[in-house]
Length: 83
Image (cartoon, rainbow, N blue to C red; front, top):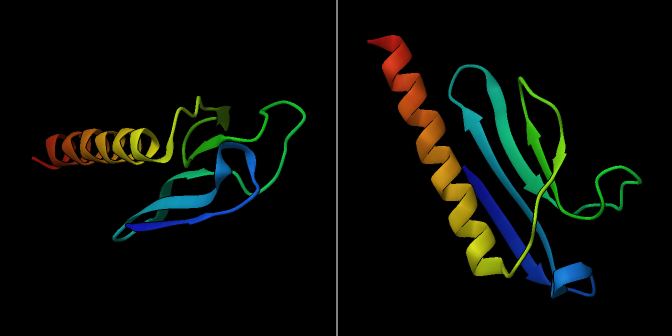
């Protein structure tokens, strides 16, 4: 897992990129605001086996917490599928 955020003039006052990598399969989940997207706006959620989507942004702390909760959920699903 990689979490990067720095204060900047991006929407929400932060430039950020949070990534979860599966140990064998590579990138699995990413939140970022690297660029404005006509369909998604500034705050994006990218999932390996799903569609990119816009994601609400309240503040950086809430965003990190939401990302970490989603990683826990994804890893719980992976553990269940391997039992």
